[in-house]
Length: 335
Image (cartoon, rainbow, N blue to C red):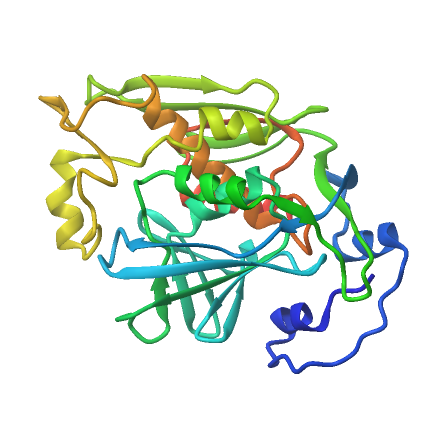
């Protein structure tokens, strides 16, 4: 199987026009032609077939930074197409090749069209095994060329809920053939760092995640560490997906002045004061802030995926005080 023509347009920058394409039936050769192994990474079969949604799912709500109402529809897609956003009929792949550094969120940009705050949605899609899908996104009052995924309750819980309600099916190409799902396996340790923050990975036969945060000036948060059992979609749904984004009350005014979190509220984030502690308890987990960082990490590393492969590496990931920029740097190292 080669990449379907609509997917090829992501990389050529050309408009997609319907056309017939003869697709190869050898699934393994097709998958390996799309992603290359290296000294650090080997792309291997997971022993599973690529999947997509059984039907369209839809959610809408207020966005975190712009405060506007946005609608998202996620459609099934052919094997090999991977995940991509469809904004004003422009296609923006969910790939680190199109990630740009932006404050407090992950942003994808292609040909001047920008999709912001993609990390929670992509985290749910990656963890639940939605390898191929078209993410149609629109806003009634969006600025030209700029749109944002709704924040919902500040977690990935609602995305997981609609994915599980709809269910998945094996994705096939345009000739009706299924395709092996590949994943990046580490051959040796890798890491990126900035000051005392880092993302490191070590060879492992299963996905494991250890994550630490440290807010010494905020007693209610302090130093937290979270470690996963062998990671899978069920573990994610129960232990990670519902963890909400958090912020410090003392930083809210500064973020507002910077034009951020215009849609933020106590309904879509947990807010902590240095002196008063949590302003909108109860927490869903004692270490909810740390678990949310794991959620973000999964979404950001999903950007390593290519052509329906798994983006998150099969490795033991150890991260400490990492943010979106550092996560993206590690995703680039994988890819």
